[in-house]
Structures are given as C-alpha cells and as structure tokens.
Image (cartoon, rainbow, N blue to C red; front, side, top):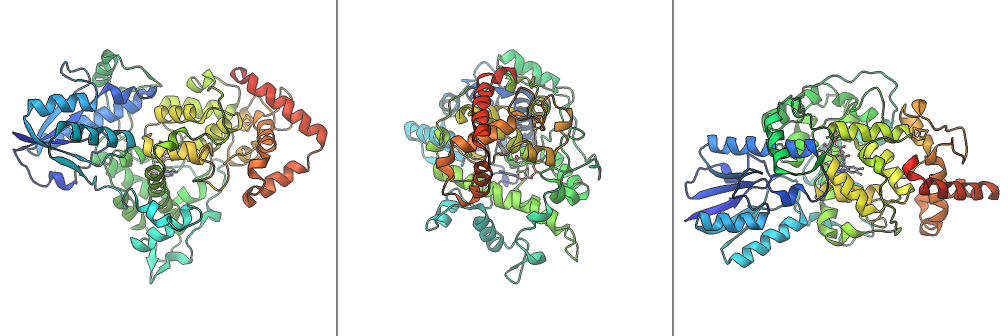
Length: 508
Ligand SMILES: Cc1cc2nc3c(=O)[nH]c(=O)nc-3n(C[C@H](O)[C@H](O)[C@H](O)COP(=O)(O)OP(=O)(O)OC[C@H]3O[C@@H](n4cnc5c(N)ncnc54)[C@H](O)[C@@H]3O)c2cc1C
Ligand code: SF4
C-alpha cells in the first residue's frame, strides 16, 4: 500500500517540501498524456520542451532516492488521460491515499477533485509553493475596489513582500519609470548573446512522431535552445542579469527584423514550468541594483512584469474562470486566416512575427500584443480561436497565463476587466517601435486602397464601428477625437475598404 502523489508537467519545482525527505511508502506519478497534448494544435518545441523537462526532473528525483512512476507518451499501459492513468495507477500501487499539488489550470483542478471524490480515497491538494500569492488573493484584494487595476495590486505586493522598498517608500523615488521604458531600437546598443542551452532531442522527437500527436512549427530537435532543467534556467537568469537586463527597460517595447529577442530574458518557460521561482528571479534582478539607483528603470520594469503582471494575471484567471474563456465583448466570429499557420502574408510585421513564432515558439510581449493581437482584434477574429492559437504556438503558453493575456489584454473580449482600453493602434505605433514597415509591400503613405497599410483602415473602422462602447471611456477620448476630425468622405472610404480587407483576409 502506497501514497500516490501526482506531479504535473508544469510542476517541476525540485525545492518543493515534498522532496525534502525520501519515503519508500510514497510513489510520485508523472505522465505524458495525449488528452493534454491535443487540447489545441501545438507547437513542436512546446511539446518537446515539456516532455524533455519532465523526463529530466523525474531522473533527478530517482537519483535522489525517490520512487517515481513515469508514463511515457508511447507506453502501452498509458491510458492517455489524467483520470484514466490515475485509476490504473491507484490500483496498481494499491494506493491508500492520493495527493497532488494545486494545478494552475482550472479544468485540471476540477478533474483531479472529481477523481478523488469518485475514488473514495483520502487525500487532496497541497500548495505548489511557487507564486508569491494565493489563487484568490487578487479577488480578495479587489473586493471593494471599483476597477481591478494592476497598478494598485503591484504596489500592494511591493509593500507586502518588501520589494524595492525602503522605509515604506519606493526605492529610487518612484513606483514606476515607464516613461523611460519606451524607446525604439535602431541597431545600437547590440544585445549580448547570453547563455542559452543547446540540446539534441532527436530521439524524443521520434517518440512524439511515433505517438501520432499532430504538431506544427519547427521542432529544432537537434538544436533545441530552451532550458529544461533548473541548472540551465539559473545559468540563463545569471547571464541575462549580467548582460541584457541593463537595457531591458529602455527597449522592452521595441521590435526589429535585425534581432528577434532584443533585451528580453526568455525565462517564461522556466518560470511557468516552475524550474525556477518568481521570487528567486526578482531577488537576483534586484541584487544588481547600483548604489545610486542608476539602473532602477530596468530593474523596476522587469520586477513589475513578474511581481506585478504575472501575479495579477493569475489572480484574474482564478477569479473569472470558467466563463472567462468564452468572453466575446464584440461578438466577433471571423475565422483565423490560414496564414496564421504559415506566416505567408504580405504584411511584413505579421509575416516576421508569425514566422519567428513558428520557428522558435517565441515572440516577445509587444509582438504578441501590438502585432498579432492588434491585428486579430481589428480584423474581428473570434477571440476564442485567437486564444487557442496563442495557447498552441508559444513555448510558455499555459492557460492560466495565456488566456487572460489574450482574451483580456489583447482582445478586450472581457469588456475591460483587465485593460482600461483596447490595445489597438494604427501603423504609426508599429513604425515608431519597429523597422518592419521599411520592408513591407504595403505603404503607410497611401490611404484606404489596395496599396495602403491594412492596419490604418482597420484601426479607424474599428473605432468607428465600436464607438458606442467607448464613448464614455476617458482613455479613448483622444482616439475618438481624432476619428471625429475625419471628413465624411474619408469615413465612407474607410468603411468600404475595411469591408474589402476583412472579406479578402486570406489574400493579405
Ligand atoms: C496575447 C499575449 C499572450 C501571452 N501569452 C503568454 C503565455 O502564454 N505565457 C506567458 O508566460 N506569457 C504570456 N504573455 C506575456 C508575455 O508576452 C510573455 O510572458 C513574455 O513575452 C515571455 O518572454 P520573456 O520571458 O522573454 O519575457 P520578459 O519580457 O523578459 O519578461 C520577464 C517575465 O515577466 C513575466 N511577464 C511579462 N509580461 C507578462 C504578462 N503580461 N503576463 C504574465 N507574465 C508576464 C514573464 O514571466 C516573463 O518571463 C502573453 C502576452 C500577450 C500580449
Ligand atoms: S506598413 Fe502596415 S502592414 Fe506593413 S509592416 Fe508597417 S504596419 Fe505592418
């Protein structure tokens, strides 16, 4: 008779208190299952990275003396679902109890609770010991507040966890140095090539192909560059802090054809699989603060992403699920064009971003928000389909963090729970923050014709057609004022050209 403990594929926290002592009466269960791998079309690198990291983690546990039952994707007794395998394994090990770490996904949470109830076994969940806050902390904090803004939550956490604070005041004289964080990048300074791993996962790739799971994107099986262990993740964190962190603040919104990742950390996969914790990342980053706070803008900007945004997004997810996934404020129903899966589109900004995403499983925040997300919203794509696309393509995409970012922040489909206004722009923003427009078939100088930039027509048409929704939103006042300045003939031209663009979306 054994105690069965489940470790999910995104719970690779070797410092969890579960592992402090070896106990021969405990069996740890890990499984690669098709029910998870086929929820949405999935990027090959996402599957490879997850399975490789899980296998490495399981080997580490075994090395430390723990008993691990690991079900590989192509094993004959793998039932290919959580509950199927749990039933089988509970019987096999004559389990007298069943425990798991709190899942980050709502549906897995439900599935495991249901399984426990049906099995009649004693057991339950324990904390995953990863986040700063509990699942419901944000909801409790926002209980009496009119709107759920990230800024008040972030400041609350800065004080509560004593991060970048001194005598109850923010270090460096401000909570936020955002104004210093909005530069475009014109080739200088050059990002340093910081330490990234390289793996040959060809054998694992063969197993995945053999299992019949359909994937897309470049597997890069013989030169896989994402960290799959805690050691590799820490090495990457260290290298990032020593090199590109110093320019993170200045260029976090910049995009360029000359450099895909610029000054970003590429740590989201390591964080989301819990190979490293948000606290150790924030502590390491803040450890580099100079005495005169000269680098505070980058350090605060980076801290805000993790202590602020990441914890806030998680709180939104748990407060608003499961209804959140089907939010559709504008009732948009258009299907994703086929080129979302190939990048073969004449709009250079989209082509570069999608091809990069297919090739690496990565695009940085502004590419996700202001290129693909911006276009998806302006074109009226179905937000649930957009969500599934993001969930499949990015190496770091797990529902709890991807869905609020996509459905809320980028598509405004939640009607403004998360964002005070939709993140939409014309080509002016894209041209200011990138060099994409120079190599584009479309021109920013033309207006509402077959040569003109589709972003411009679609932007004005979106504002015009959704005007009633935004009339009372003070953050939209300037955009609407600019719309009102347009003469009637131009508005007619915008509306008819936008219709053509949406109907001809496959040919863009
Ligand atoms: C439409 C859309 C979808 C997104 N989907 C995901 C997703 O599936 N998984 C995911 O981890 N992030 C997602 N993000 C947030 C952000 O784009 C990624 O966290 C970031 O690009 C990861 O790259 P990085 O590690 O180089 O980040 P950096 O720019 O170096 O930032 C450091 C860390 O801050 C955290 N962070 C930054 N912004 C956010 C945010 N908005 N929400 C949560 N954490 C944040 C991440 O953990 C990230 O690793 C999405 C953003 C948008 C607009
Ligand atoms: S001109 Fe328009 S479509 Fe082309 S890259 Fe610029 S913003 Fe994108």
